[in-house]
Length: 232
Image (cartoon, rainbow, N blue to C red; front, side, top):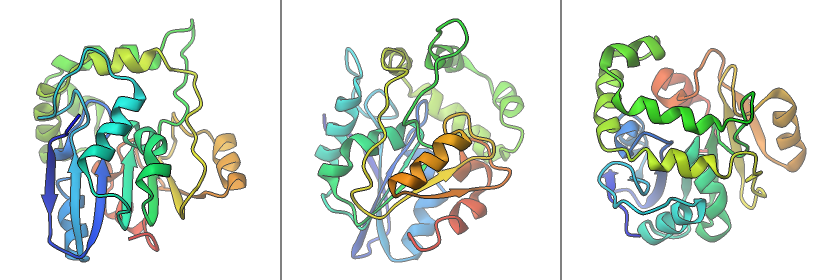
């Protein structure tokens, strides 16, 4: 599937950005220009079922990964994936082969909630959230971030969440085939301390962004960038 992309900058080095569930390339509205200022040509995708990209009957992880591979240059200097984007990057990294990979609070292992309910099933209700509900859910968001969230939800197909619900409990942790950073929220509902230690033992660099919610790049933008030191 050829994906819709958004670009910033004209540098010689390519940076690929992959958003999380319910979002789109628009969520990188501050990250893209910041990387462009550092000499990157930044390409952010809209994953299948998100933003202006095509819809599908179902959304397996491999569709997400193969669509990114079809839509961005191979061997970029940098690839950053957040949440579902981190999972997608994990599924594609051995084919995309970025020089450096950053997984921001990645969904390598999506938890099963009490009663065996998939965490992702509850996301469907967010489709119709108002600005007031979003602000209450994300008290650290600026008014600009809340407005971005409202717009991104309009372009989101909730079937993506239901499709992910079918693979909750699956381990998508990749091998660190390239210098790889896992950036973790504080606290993280996706990367518990024991899992973080396991990632270190596997060869990942792991950094916690103190006080950050799940969407680190949107909640604490400056801390997100400084937390990438050595990778950008």
